[in-house]
Image (cartoon, rainbow, N blue to C red):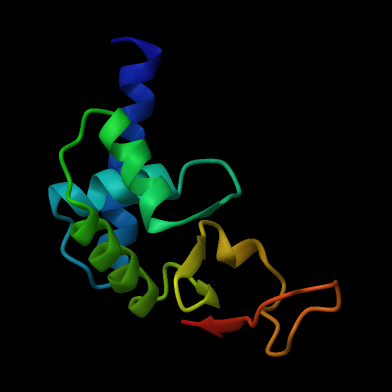
Length: 118
């Protein structure tokens, strides 16, 4: 078995366990999205960027499903949602590594509003 296949299978096993632990049924689409979100890198994704990534990986998932799944993950405590403005939300993929989530506007120069959800 090749290294890439083993890593993909390992990601699926970890994603399935994480979903079950959060009380979510590990559907094929949830497992695929969780595998991409929770692999070993810190990043912030949007629904659109995650949809592009999963589509490029050859998985057929609608953008609506990606949005719904991200919100389900947020409600289950797997993600946090950062609402930048009415048209943009980001989802930090490793929120457990953040020491705390701010409840006020950040100190750096910021042109929009920001709120935290989840």
